[in-house]
Amino acid sequence: MKKYKRIQRVGALMKIFTERPNHVFSYNYFAEIFNAAKSTISEDIVIVKELVEELQYGKIETITGASGGAVFIPSISLEDTKTILDELCVMFAKPDRIIPGGFIYMTDLFNNPSIVDKIANVISAQFINQELDYIVTVETKGIPLAIMCGKILNVPVAVIRRNNKVTEGATVSINYISGSSKTIQTMSLSKRSLSENSKVLIVDDFMKGGGTAKGIYDMMQEFKAEVIGTAVVIETKEPTEKLVDNYISLLILDSIDQQNKAIKISPNVKLLQ
Image 1 (spheres, rainbow, N blue to C red):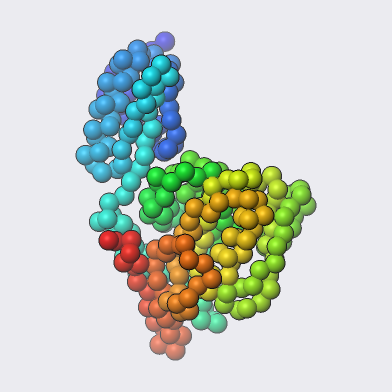
Image 2 (cartoon, rainbow, N blue to C red):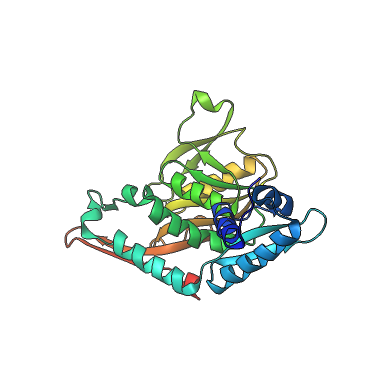
């Protein structure tokens, strides 16, 4: 079996760690891949660990013992967080995003992998030290973001549907009141999507009154799940009182002026403290 030089092993280790963050890799796993002794792999990981910390990509934690291993835990600096939030504000505030009814067109941004990856990194950093079993979102724009967060936090994603689908099998359905329109709506989740007594993080694209988030909270009670937190990309400044309390937002939408084609949106300063 081929032998690899240290520089080759270190490069490959960086790729393996960053492609699957928050996953514990055993030394045996690396030893088999690189045809090297575990002591050699341990020395390689020390090099990668120092590099990751110096570049402020996160940290690599090692696990001692007979089944020792290593895990890459990503992080993001306040400076990089500010840069990302400022970039998002510029993108969301473009006048041509205003559509009839006083809404912002956002689908293209939430379907752009590079943009969603940046958003997911900011959100995931807020919950990186939390014990989680699932990311929960509601269709449709929140799905790409939830999947990216699930990859970073190394947990599966459960998607709540607006309508029942035959392919979902047995489902749990609830009615909830929209926080903005005050209308009664329905959401459903397959019983196979979520294990009871799980710890979940709710991720969504937008919050106005908090009705959808409250509906997801109520749905989680049906599964006896514990909601660790809620993260949304944009929340509106009004109404100030939401139907949920335990949430974070990346951006705050102040106003949409259809007549003058102006969108006022700013970073949530709480994330920059």
